[in-house]
Image (tube, rainbow, N blue to C red):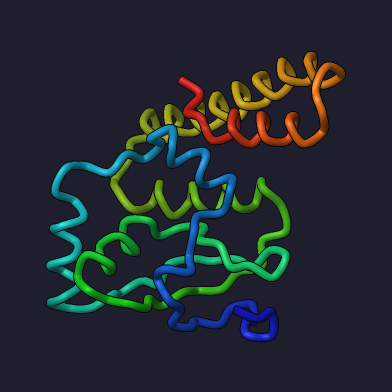
Length: 164
């Protein structure tokens, strides 16, 4: 996908296979924040086949690559229903904080969460990133003893692990 295709605020059908989660969102998904309930994707896929997608997923472009920010359930359901493309609302999100905020807003408004449940999810998100940062700081201690390539490989490996 080329950079000129992406315009802020545009809704465009993009190939499902080309929409990986943004790396920050991937961390949250691997840690089961806003977990998917059993049968939820199948139920949504049936709905998509009956009435199509009512709300586009949210994507952003970074370094010439498009990433999914919000809409994991819709994307999985569309794929299960046999769709090859999905409507995407294109947003310019300039920081990881904005990306997490957009993702969080989409997920917290998806269900009827109580204030207590919302606060619990927000604290869970903060905790995941705090633990992730602590793991990277610990890794920094061995950096002088290994090559830059080995360090980056370990850093990527640790970043991909659930923090629990």
